[in-house]
Amino acid sequence: MQHLTKRQTFVAHLFKPKAATLLFLLFALMIPTVVMQAQGGDEAIAALQSAVDSVWLLMAAFLVFFMQAGFALVEAGFISSKHVTNILMKNLFDFCIATVAFWALGFGIMFGAGNDFFGTEWFFLNGVPEIFPNLTVSTLTFFFFQLVFAGTAATIASGAMGGRTEFKAYLLYSLLVSIFIYPVVGHWIWGGGWLSKLETPFFDFAGSTVVHSTGAWVGLVGAIMLGARKGRFGSNATPMPGHNMTFATLGTFILWFGWFGFNPGSQLAADPSAIGLITVTTNAAAAAGALTAMFFNWLLVGKPQIGAALNGTLAGLVAITAPCAVVTPGEALLIGAIGGVIMILATTLLERLKIDDAVGAVPVHGFCGIWGTLSVGLFHGTTGLLHGGGAGQLVSQFIGVVAVFVFVVVAAVIMFSLLKVTVGLRVSAEAEEIGLDLAEHGTVNYPDQEVIKPAVALSPSGGD
Image 1: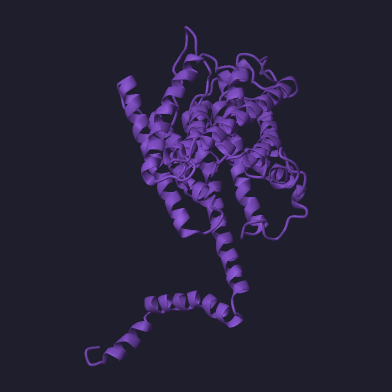
Image 2 (image 1 turned 30 degrees about the horizontal axis):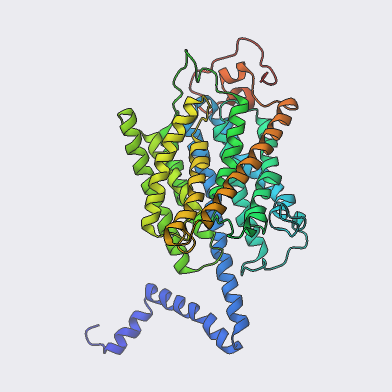
């Protein structure tokens, strides 16, 4: 090669495999520009923008879908080994049911035109436009992105109610949450409902309230109405630690990863500046939540514990979900850090009230969802109180938090009461003793371990 001219050397490099691949990609990227120039412009630009935005939103939706695996592992890790198959079944089938329910009625109730409280069109996706109104993405792309959010809301309560809930009751619960409770809340806030029409509109960018608090309040009602797991509280209380912190840690990392679709995807367009900021604020809050939860819990119990650190990570993520697009990275660190502390305090509160939340779902998704939603009123870059925007945004956020809490709690009480008197809500004491894996599903997750057989025949359901 030393006898070749510079031009000959350059040409030779172009035809090496790696260089040729890069050259091909360069020409491929130039094609849309050439086409737009040839066709004269605006329509081609709009079509390209729609394609890019739709692909970005689908990729974000795939990440959010993968969060189902994260929830499954976190809940499996925090639950007793004799209930693992049961909790995995619930995490699988709540999304399956959400898929059908949200397609049938949920999407229309949430986003269809109607009134300030619920939508009345687009049921079974009939009559939906090709491009979703006021967006650049296809309606089916938008539907799928919203579907994976609905699945997330439905799965949150499974952990809080873990270890004692009838499987058939859980299936019906998932149906009712996905087809009515979650879509109504979503319509109020994201579908043009009354909270979005306040003088200062309620703001929840990616769902601290819409998704996380909704799921948590359902879980709270369920946990109260079920009662605590046998032996959880009282004079003869026994510790019930999670059986596998490896599962819980891996699940937390998967959720952290999936949140990079959950929050940035909620921009609903491939806006590089916006999604860059959202990604950074999301990550900062997660790290800060883990740090403060670990250190605060360390101060309280004298040991740095993995369970507190994992839930602290999730607390930070939930807290930043509402304000992630309108705060600075520094403010995100503060929001996440406060979220980690709130999670520890809320966990302690539930313990004192003898409310048995098996995985800490209510402190993480409920209490930190409140904090994240209210933090918008403080830190929003233009309307926040600390940025000179006055108290209007904070008041709207408070109204939204209270309204959603009241609606979800009332709806959940009615729902669980009906389930209790029909199919049954709590498993029998015998089923709880031997484990829901064997009692509900006829299998165990760890077949090499000894299975405790019941002394009497299993009752079809508990007496609670």
